[in-house]
Amino acid sequence: MRSAILGARNLTGCEHRLALDFTVEQERDAAETAEANRRIDAAQAHRRAVIDRIRGFQCGRAGAAVVIEAPDHRGRVAATQEAMSAGVEWILNATLPTDYDRGRRGHSEVLLRVGDGYLPIIVVNHRVTTTVAQPREGEIPTLQTSPMFGWHPEPDATRAFRSQRRDVMRLAHLAAMLDDLGQLNVPREECVGGLIGLDADCMVVVPLGEGTEDYDESFARRLAIAKGQIPTQSRKVSECRSCHWWPRCEAELIERRDVSLVVGGNQGAVLRDAGITTVDQLANYRGLAPVDWTGAIAFNDTIVSAKCWVRDIPLVRRLERPRVQRADIEVDVDMESYSERGAYMWGTLLTDNTDAARPVVYRPFVTWEPLPTTDEGRSFAEFWSWLMDERAAAHAAGKTFAAYCYSQHAENRWLRGSADRFAGMPGIPSRQTIDTFIASREWVDIFEAVGSNFICPKGKGLKRIAPVAGFGWRDSEASGEASMEWYAAAVALDGAARDETQRDRLLMYNEDDVQATKVLREWMASDDVLALPFAPDLLAENLPG
Image (cartoon, rainbow, N blue to C red; front, top):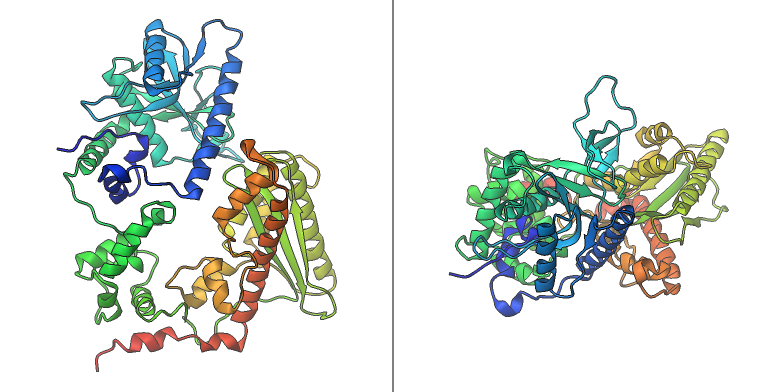
């Protein structure tokens, strides 16, 4: 039987990736994607900063905190065990001994002594709470937080927990390991963990006791997968985009013509249960949808997507004449952010459809101070003031106005987040002002318009759809992933080598994104779009007769 030792990373995500990671020795060290490496580097830098901050809180208390700094794993384990035996209150950068019998390994950014044992506290590079703008009077908060300098949990009515399964499972994993060592401060059924997010302004109390059974079952299944006792098979899932195994899996899926290439998630499972396992079977399907069919994607849309995959059709009209909202004054908006740290650029492109002589001008509002920075608030305020001034001028001239983005989820997040984080700074709008604008007809999501007007078998991303309308990016390497690398170099983030030429590259990339949205919208409103196949015509091929 193959041996397997699972760490926190192995507890969530694609089961087939887990199986592949443990399949062949020489393949276990398969290179991560550039995006994955960027995230790893950013997370490590954030953890180091938080550990230094916690150590600073305890610097006036001799022996209260120790940082485990041994260069190798064995040394870190020995130092951690020595600190636990000595009852050190704050053990930072702790590494627990590998449990070869149970198949567990783990490390915790913080082990905090509470009572007669330790509770685990982990540091993650994403936000773990959201601000509650207006707590309801008399409502008892369900979330507890503690200040960073000591374990003092109290109900917190100002925040809501942004729970992620991977964080909870890692804490549960560490609690199980501490329990096996006899070092957990309370029985597992009663234990909690601590979670420090990107803002690092508190420790979130995460109850773990009720999830003990879930963790144990998940761990047992994943350990069996790693040992080769439970077979897995490649399926296309959202995780594939950043997985180093994707080229291998994609080749297998294409060879099998697997239905997950066009239908994923629970809907793909429903198709397989109904005996529809290949794209070809779905493309030629005649009859009603499977009885268990649920979800946002209509069954007929999956048939059309399968036909498109077979025939290499990039886009299909839902409507005989696609519809998209237009205005006299149109402003395309594209925001650039870096992970969870903030939004460093708001790019705009204004088009006056009532005055052909007025130039179409790209205007970026940007900070080149490394995120996070209060200068982000300054650039956001300038963007918002400019946008509202153009809106007011249009209204005053009796003209219609619309601002456009592509997939408002990201823009809305940073519109609201900027209003919350920089409240009180000059030019920063209130959260209510932002919400009112987002809810208005003058804020238009072209991504949603694409979904309403077209079936998109290869995805609805801007870089998938805009080329169909004839737009191309000037930089052949342009992508969201690449822009992260460019930004890190542009501002020398986290010790990266400074390369200010990457600032020009980011500006060109952002300008192309707003240009792409404009070109796509205008194409959707033109007669050229009628050259696309019409979905009812494709579905008619499957009707009896």
